[in-house]
Image (cartoon, rainbow, N blue to C red; front, side):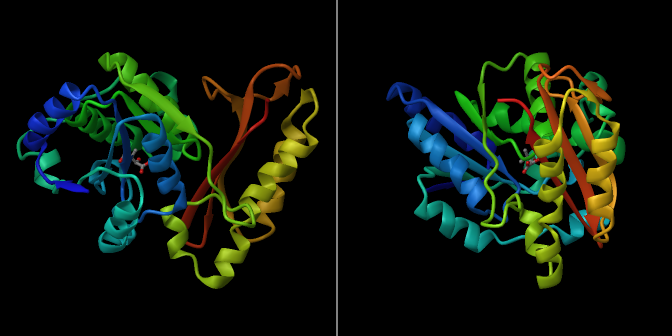
Length: 281
Ligand code: PAF
């Protein structure tokens, strides 16, 4: 696996890949890699001729400085995992490489998506995500970028940013990878103590209450039931919402046909977990 720390190193590498007519698959990450990330690498490896992973803990997307300080960093283990996987190149930039001093932040028009759900509870988070993904795409120039559906809203926001910026990269959204008991894999799970780890499954349980019981008509009672399930186990819920699968606008009634998704974000002590379940087949 090639290790690259500077954007300018990509020029020669990309030229060689293009000459060899190989396609490039890209998996952006913030490290603390788990089986969910590796499944994205596997997918990229299967579908493209050269797989790039980036690890960069992006300060611009942390609205809460405490959260940034607590973000798990496991770079040596990450490199070992990537070496065992089909990853051909790891891009591991320093902060100054991605955010040179004096550079003014670009502002992206993300429409309503920016201010609802995650956007409401994490102001400026999605601007920060878009800033880094824009810079990464510009450096890596992939044919396909692979993202996990666990960050459902992030996938839609990045798609919008890519459309606005005119990127031709294809976006491949891959299924959420779960632990044996249903908990969605996440780097933040590393911070759960054993008791919290057991309780953490309540988040998917509450979404499954919606999935298993939803019927056309008024949705408010089912949202309340799911929220109560989570809060009775000590979670502090930011939201449990049922939303249009494409715009994420909240739905209080359902005609049984519209594509919808149930999304949850909640704190277990100081650890914020998110998950979602798509409610159409
Ligand atoms: O999902 C993540 O890990 C991050 O938000 C991303 C897409 C790598 C941007 O920093």
